[in-house]
Every structure is written in C-alpha cells, then in structure tokens.
Length: 153
Image 1: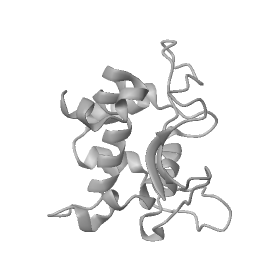
Image 2: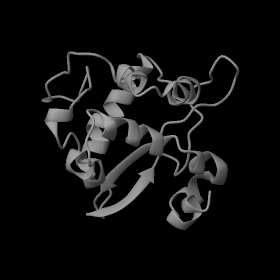
Image 3: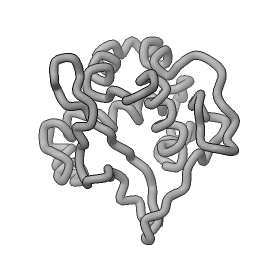
C-alpha cells in the first residue's frame, strides 16, 4: 500500500461550496491508497461514526463528531471547520464523520493503540487537526506533504 496520504479530485483543495462570506471551502481526504489508485475504507467499524455510510456499513447512531471536538475544548478547530470544511447537501458534522470513519480508520497512526495515554476520541481530534492544519493553509497542498516543511512551522 502506498500511503501518499493527501489527495483531492484536483490534487489540491477544491473550492466547491462558498461559505456565507464567499470564502471557498475545501474537500480533503487523507487516506491510504494502493498504487492503482484504489483505496480501502471503513477499516475499523468500532470507530465508525458515519450516520449515512456507504452500502453494507451499519449506520452510526450517537452523538455527532462535533460533540467530540467540543468535549476536547477545541472550539477553535470547530469554528475553522464550520467555516472552511462545509458540506454540500448534508450537515457538515455528518460529512466530517464520513471522512474520519471511511478514511482515517485505515491509517495505523490513528489507531487508538498509538495514543498513550488514550483519551476517547483523541484520534478523531488529531485527524481533524491534521486535515485542517496550519501547515496546509500556510504552505499550500504540495508542501503539505513535506514533513520537514510542516515541522518548520
């Protein structure tokens, strides 16, 4: 598996849905993919928070991922996501849940065993932090994949 990580349909951030201030939003997927462009999804159903998942995946019934963000006191992250990571045609919190459940659960770095000590939903917050990181916005999508670039911020 080739873990290139970041891709979107155009190779960078897609301004597909204008926020009220006419600021473009983005659709970004961080996921492992195979060399042929295919990818796996929903790799850990114990961390499936998507209320409307792909066919064959049981829907999640419970608090939205926005409540996880709030429980960590990350109103800054939630405000950023509400402004720049807006869903088109569904509540944004459902879209965020889909992105985490389908894509992040397939990365070993978001496995709960990687967090010591582990606090429930810490990996969800970490995924959203990485996905909407200051590195991406400060340096652009090409440099975002350069770890040294990110570490220099």
